Amino acid sequence: MDGKKNGNLLESHEHCVVCGRNNPFSLGLQFQPVDGEAVEGFFTGGPHLQGYEGILHGGVISAVLDSAMAHCLLLQNIKAVTADLRVRFLHSIPCSSKVTIRAWLTCAVSTLYEVKAEAWVDGKRMARAKAKFMENGEVG
Image 1: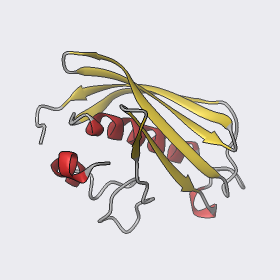
Image 2: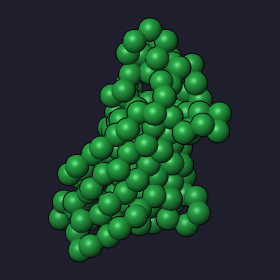
Image 3: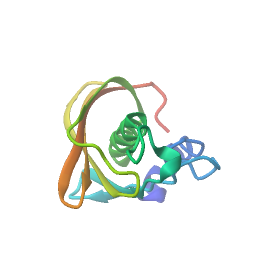
Image 4: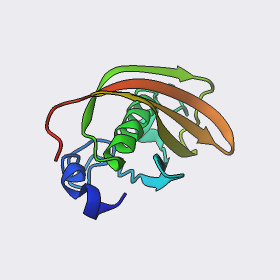
C-alpha cells in the first residue's frame, strides 16, 4: 500500500499479529492495492499455524481475512474496527499452502462499511468472509 498516502494509518498497525512490521510474532503479510479499491496479499502457512494435523487453524484464516478487509479500508484512508465478522470455510487449507487473500469494499453508509474477502489456494476459493466495520473516530 502507498505509505505516503496512508503512512500514519499503517503505523497504527505496526504491532499487528497479521501484518505488523514491529511484531516479532507477526505473519508479516503485506497487502497491495489491486483493481483500484481492493487489496491482495499472500502468505505460506506452516506447522506452527495448524489446528488439526496438517490443516491451517481456522482462527488464523479468520484473522488474515479480517486484516485484509481492514487494509482495504486503510487504502481509502479509513481507519475502522471490525463490528461483525462472518467466515465461511469451504475447504480445509493444508498448512504448507501458498494462500492468496483478497478483500474489497461492497458498501459504505456514513461511518459503517461492509467489506468482503476471500482466501484462494491454487485457483480454488477455500474460505470467504463478510464483515461490517465502524470508523473509530480517529482517522490519521
